[in-house]
Amino acid sequence: MPAIVDKPSVTKVCVDDFALRKRFSYGTVMVGLESHRIIDLIPSRETTDVANWLATFPNIQVISRGGAATYSSAATGSHPEAIQVSDRFHLIKGLSEAISKYIIREFPARIEIPLTEEVSEERRTLYNTANRPLRIRFAHQKKECGLTVSDIALLMHSCPTTVRKYLVIPEDKIPENRAISRERQHQLAVQQKQCEVAEARKLTEAGYPIEQIATMMHHTRKTIQNYLNPGYSVTNGHYNRRIPGKLAPYEKEVIELRGQGLPYPKIHNILCGKGYTGSVASLRMFLQKERTRAQEQEEQSKPQSEFIQRKSLCQPIYKKLEDVATITSDQYEQALEKYPLLSQLYTLAKEFHTVMFSQKPAKLDLWIKSAPKYDIPELQSFMEGIHCFNSPPKRPNHQLCWWNGKAPLGQNLCVSA
Image 1 (cartoon, rainbow, N blue to C red):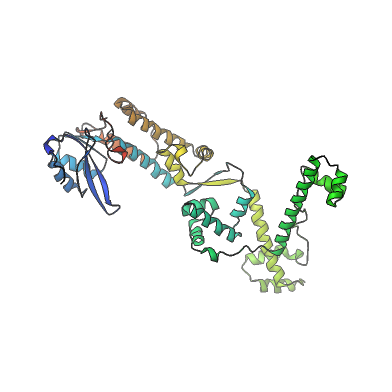
Image 2: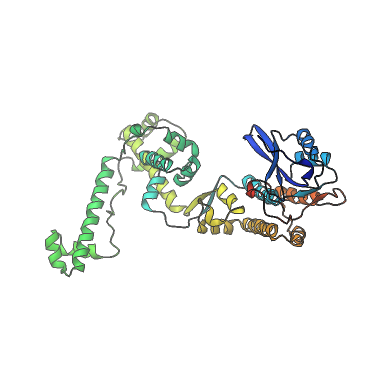
């Protein structure tokens, strides 16, 4: 049996909506500001339905509500003499949404900032789009860890569409790494050389002289001295060095002709008329290496940077920085340094939050008067809403004030200001 509500005894209430089926149907709940308990609810939030429902409570004196026009009209129509209180939760939410809308409108989905930590060689390999099998496996691993498509795309410096294509590839269909034979041989030689260098240095630390180390490792004294040099590089200086060949006199012309859209056989015919004796395959190989070299130079020349998500800049408005999992403190500082206005908006939001929980109306009046005027339409709209709500000549029963009680049912319902 449902509890019988003594409607004439209800005088101070909070009304707010709740979802029956999110984005499709909603209801309205009434909570007692003094009892902090649900009094009644209806399966609608239409103005007429809410007004008729409120009218069945004849002695309501205070109605705490959000800024929706539905509840404003319903409260005014059913109880024109009642004081309408703008509650704390909806005020803080309104300011947070205003700043978030500005960030979403003004900033791209991925925001580039200076690099906050050194990128490992493994990560650089991952960023290379030529390493498709590695990127596909990385996307699958992160998906299993619970990351969203957008989060994975951010880590891979890719777009969400590409990540979605990677994720629909079954595990048994992921292609194998197809490194060319020359590249595999180079990587193996580098690994072997690293092991030799490490062994030579370990023997030196153990007290063995250079001559004995050279004998033990079957190398010359000069080689061991090179291994012990702190600045020694295991990469062969001749690796990937371009050797002039038959195509050398025509390289610039090949790039220009290919840039005009000419096919390789036609370029080959043009060059043969000028004395070139090589094959069409040599043209293709040359341009492939040229593209790879250009990409490597571009990566080395551009300043090191990283990306953060736009939503990561929205969350610090209403969360503590340590509670935002998608941005570090260093990234946060870099974003503020690049966009100083964000720092001012964060400060504005935090001051408003402090004022709302201070239970001192004078501080709210001071914040409203001293809040700087930004040329941001969303923020100006929020400030106009506060001034309009708290304008006694126009709305004598609408107030921004504090209720001397604890928040009923937490912050998911009305938190009276």
